[in-house]
Image (cartoon, rainbow over all chains, first blue to last red; front, side, top):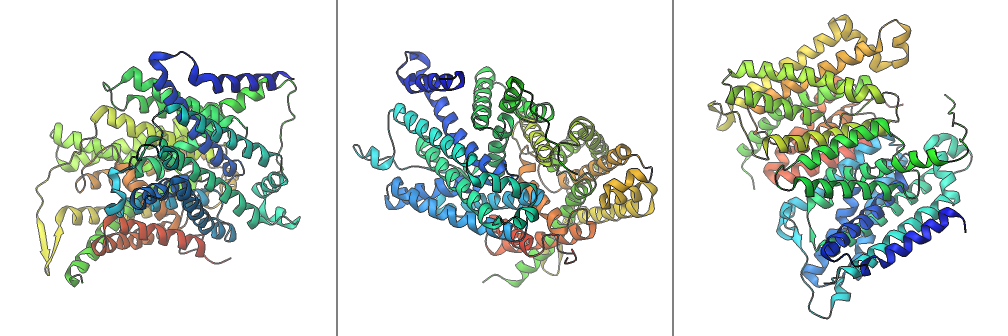
Length: 331
Length: 288
């Protein structure tokens, strides 16, 4: 086996054994942080499926919100198991994604415009959740109804964090698999051509709308699944953390920080942002509310100015033995 | 059924809100049109100017008009600072990075304001009367803000059409490449544009601070609607943004009375999305 593969297998073994390591005083907390990293990396990876082809969405909060709220509301009001609820949530997400992506592709909404249209979509979902406060709890959010004892599996609620840990690990690996799969497919070549020049892509026979729609729906569905997983783990949903501009920007930041053109970029970025905000929270605690986020914001600006390819992307370029020929783009 | 008088009052309030939104959108649209960069943090800069006005007036006891001028001056400095510190180093980066750099600034300003001033709502307390016109109750503060913002918009228009640098700014927003050929210095035009955009933010901050209380999440409340207005009006199209501001503010205001404030915004955003599909270049764009 070559070195990178060996490293990968070793890392996976450590991750699989982690819940049984004797980390006692910090164990629950560490698991909590790692579970969040897995879930948000998965969501970041889902975002980068679109982002890497120039479809920069600032409204992925919409899909998170639709996913999380659909399962939560179905469970709270009708007692429908989140397993079934997530099927409904995924269908709803597909409908929303098509509703947004089809006209965007049809009428050639690109670049800034695409970003702002998706931003509006994210805000619409957030405001709808707040407006329907009678059953969504408005901006106060909604707590998942606890499951009766013995029905934890059907309700996806477990008192033991380790169950969520393995669930989130599997989810994260599945996300990486989808990413790698797309990376090696014909769709990637097609999408890259579309990202460069839609007219040229169409002229060589690429069905532009079909590919864009496909990649958007895939990205949206995975994001919704991530939202459901997060809601099930935290057992609380809130329009601020699961819809709207703020969470959408957070996803994008983490991915850009790590590097959106590489498999592990979103994971590295998410792990760093979560670790950083947890660390700053521990250091500053309740003494200086806002200080942690201030440093976080400042670092983001600095990173985007000085390391635009992302941390992982830049590191990988640095480590690559042969310097790649610079990509020159015809003017 | 809603009394017609409430609808009329909502319509008038919508016009008053539209004046302020137009001011917010014009500053952003100017920068957007010239530099082709969306300052996601624009309304957060406005929020900082509101804090400046608040402190000058309520803490240091300056008269309101002087506090407003202080806010304006601070806005100019902010605009120049943002351009030199954040935009200049990434002027040739991909658009997404430029967007995100100002997005990072948004997080920074928002949380730094929380850190410095906590999340308390603070307002400049003026005892301005409520005036009654034909059974409708209108706030005098809003009326003053509306008139002043219209004056500011006219001032911006005169600046852009009657001065040399204003003409240069409009020239860049039409063709960036040609400007350098004509011997104008791009950096100078960019700095002036950012300063003017910052000045608009300062004026908007001063006028908003007499109507709304300021808090660190003010930018999050007014930011999205401001972008929508710019895009709906058409990039760099000043008249379009002006009209779009009034259309959206009417929808928000009347929708707010009929259903709820959130539904007013939802309808405004949905109309924005649909309009993007129908007229992607803005409401006044000519069909290709």
